[in-house]
Image (cartoon, rainbow over all chains, first blue to last red; front, side, top):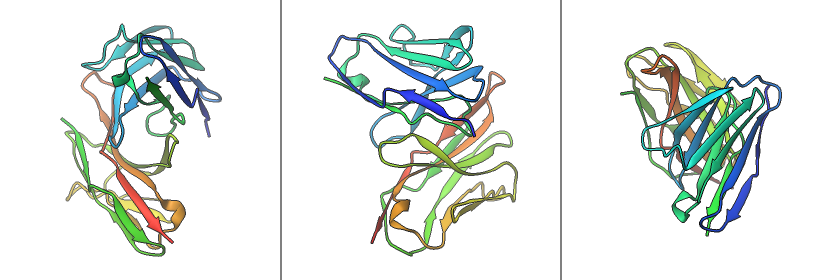
Length: 111
Length: 115
């Protein structure tokens, strides 16, 4: 089956800095990428849906200027958390096909 | 709107015990139903799915039956192992308001299996 590679697996950054998370779909043409966030002991919440070659669609309450999404090719989508704050600490997971494939997730800790 | 409710955890069982994790849903259409498993520090993995009423999904000894009359999709396993310790998510995928499909997850149930 398709393999989704998410990088980095974990990252610690200082408040105010930006962090980029990459999601690669290795053998599946990802015209769409779904980005989720999971707070400790909670379920996944869809943040945004990125579309190859066009602007991402953000869910209500998600700041598009803070969570920058780029989907330049069928194999790569990136999520950049800009000016990170401790409350952004979370587990971020990508999926090119929600009912089948997910990345292994990125645990972000902002200190 | 659509929603998924699953039993709160944690669930603690001894090895070889019988497992049931309850899941019920509400949906306006005819959703597909899923169970995902998340091992510590990892992303989600699809465990099993069912796409229509009365379908039974099964994988690795786990099974769940799509019950439209009770809007349920309970996860069961006859004999759990320590390696089954993980968080289990029930989810549905349905036609969203914008025309695309949306997946909605339950809150997750943490399972601990003791040797």
